[in-house]
Image (cartoon, rainbow, N blue to C red; front, top):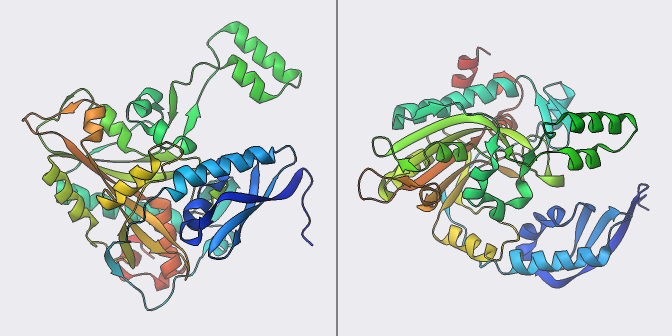
Length: 394
């Protein structure tokens, strides 16, 4: 008999409508975002998922959870039109990958700090820098990319301007501060001393939320170029920086972090220019064991979510490079996205010619990249490819 921890309870929620097995993975990726009251869940059913066994807080409103689940199923899951999986290239391996996260923790190479937060040392540290430099060298040599180092914070107005809030509200993380006022500081300090909760004190005394944590680096580039012409025509920019996405209870090892490091590349120019450059970057230049496929973003709740998911796949606007972690799991270490004219229009980026400005970007998650490398080759450098060992002096 399973023991339920204090403060929690379990319920079976019948799903209305039910979810076909083909949509189960899509549904499962959204359950934790339905409500913070959901602490764990199991999908119930065979060819059709008819119910959800949920572990929730004792105060959870189960009828409200049922209503919210029905909305997500109808709006985000069942309305998604099926599109045949398309693989651009694939390189299988004769031997399966082996998940090394527990070994990393046991040897001190990784330390779980909190939800979605992992500190890491060598060999992950050395590999993230090595892999980043490999990608950076390609985009500098191949495309003549201009490199920038951006601030961590980004203006909420920038994220509103590009429509991120309406597309991915579940992922956003915001930054606030106390009002610049002596009475506010005194009230805040007195409230803490009196034992009042930090949350209510911050909500009462905080300023407007005018900055947030960037979910990726490319928005800095678009903001930098906003309301003006491209300097010198088609352009390529690259940057490396911390990105932040609230992954709820989906956070896991180094494959899904709340804050992580991205090497970003942004292409701007005509349609043909950005698509050709994206295709060149997607080519298997790193000799990786994995595959590259058509994919879609985790659009959420918006009324046009199904159409956006379908059009992304149908028009091949997004690809993912996926590497194995073990015999059953893999992880996307890079996405290659074509935005058409969306971001250029949103940010008022124009062309010195009469052509519309199109954009594309690619983002390599460096922690995921290093983690997948170790799952493929192991923690012992003796098993690593010679170029990597030599470059890192191992």
